[in-house]
Image (cartoon, rainbow, N blue to C red; front, top):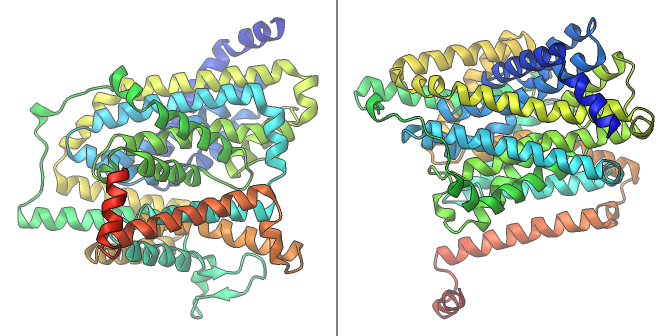
Length: 507
């Protein structure tokens, strides 16, 4: 207990609290602006920690990380453009709720379940950091490949009415991500002799384009035709989720928290994988799966809980093994080492007060982020009263600025326009955009880990079914794909009527 009270006194100092408040605000701003990720925010605040003591420095880094993980929700719900890749799964139901005048309910619910997911993942981190870190270390390239294949199988659940259209969209995402240079051999792919294409299509640029540009075009066309939907300010309410609503979704919250924590503990994964996996599981286990994608609050709860639970999971290999799970964790690792703190097994025993301080600051950061979002909820919701044509222009300006800021490249702005126009054509052809984003997110990880596993095994494919995690994830992927195919066939009436009647009677 002495360690706890010593750490608590340090973390509650005015320097640490001020740093946490600044970090939370910066993280939220960067997370909410399309193209500005919390990784960029961490890179910007890292130099600010050089003159700080260890506790304020840790507070600034952790609060920026957590604020950025939560900030992408705001833009995803209000304007239909995810601020971060991990918020992409929130767009479908979150933006639909916003158009129904329930943006405050969606943001409030997302904020509360994000905090629940983050704090529960903190508890899991407290009791299992050493054990889970060792389990995560057992995940090699073959196991991560199997996990990503399982993640790609969620395309089946995101395909809306047509499985074929969903698979086409997913394949298109994989093709787009392969543009540029081969990550291992450096061979040019699909560059057509263009030097600029050697850098490839940046994920965030493509994501902004696919979600924002079609929406901007649609809003401007509706304004031109005089058919835009305007929200009545008199009916716009600021409401928070009731306890009953949260209890009704308790299993969704618990399941998504576990998914986010486990995925976060595996190096090489990211929040988008956790969010899409959680969303897919909610769609499969929901009592009303037909509502998902049309404004169901469960479609907001699942991804937002998972991508914030990932923050606690990502700290497990960082603290337990000194291994960063993603670029953001690498920056935090650098910040800790600048302060003379070297994460790893010895840290847990040699400096328990530092580890306890990290745990406490983790929880405080979530409380601060939640307070800022809830206090600003009314202001966020009032943004919906901006005329649609003005909102469309504002979105377009943010997209241009965000696309340029990622790599300071005007070529990325051009890529955003081209990919966005392709996205608009996909929408008109009723091909879902979300599977394209999923292919873009998971494609690089799949290629890198698949080829690394084959190189390490000297081409022996048995490496992919020689461990329990690999077999488990591949089996789950096969079950998901098989179940979706069967459901699709039965929906089209190909299954014999007697068998379908029998299935309905069993149900």
